[in-house]
Structures are given as structure tokens and as C-alpha cells.
Image 1 (tube, rainbow, N blue to C red):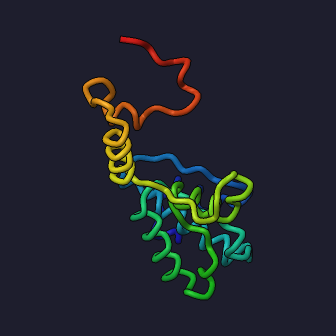
Image 2: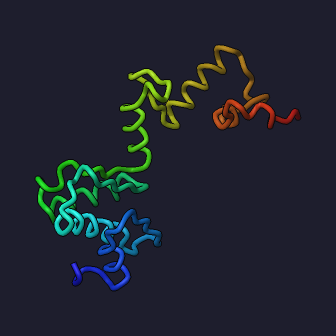
Length: 152
């Protein structure tokens, strides 16, 4: 590990006394640091994989982390790790605790394209003129913001 990380990276990877938040620019080795830290915790601290959570912003970084850990510690040892994006983690938790969140088990999460399609259908059905209220603006409106609306 020491050969593959610079001194600040190594310091972060070897810190095992609680959570670690890594802030650094693109291409600076964040994924490498987190990957080696997880490997160190698994191998040296003998922490079970299901007690470790690694969250990142992109699917690419999450997949890289998963693949690297499988190479470093082996498939059996890496099985059970929670490695995901913030969005995937949120979706997973909502699926598991849907009742507590007031959701049905089969709730759907709409991406931008799905949201636009639904809003276009609603606008057509309600005969809302986009000159009066653009779909784009309506998609950004949240319940509870009514007091913030301004007449034009």
C-alpha cells in the first residue's frame, strides 16, 4: 500500500478511528485512498464487510472501487460491502424502509426524461399553456413553496 500512495494519501488510508471524508480534486486519487482504506480495515482491523459503507457521487467511481477491492482483498472478503452512489444508497434505503417514508413498496423514481414526459402529459390534459407556465419551471416547483411564488 505504501508504494501506491503518497504520504497524505497513506495517512488517510491508515486512519481507522471512525468515519473519513475525503475532499480532493479530480484525478487526485480519492478512489484509490478510499479503496486502500477499506482494504486495510478489512485485513488489519478484521471488520466485517457489511459494517463498511463507501459512498461516492458517480457510478464510475463506485464501480472502480468495487472492482479494485475485489482484486485487493478477494471476492469473498469484498462480498457484502456497501459501495454505491449517494442516489443509489438513498434509493436502497427508501426501498427497505418505504413504509416509514410513507411510500408504497413499488414506488417509482423518475429521471429527468420521465419527469418531462409526465409533466407534458399533465399540461396537455389540463390545457396549460407553456407560455404561461413552462414545464421546465413547473418541474422545479416543490410543495410548500407556494408562499414564495410571485405574480408577473
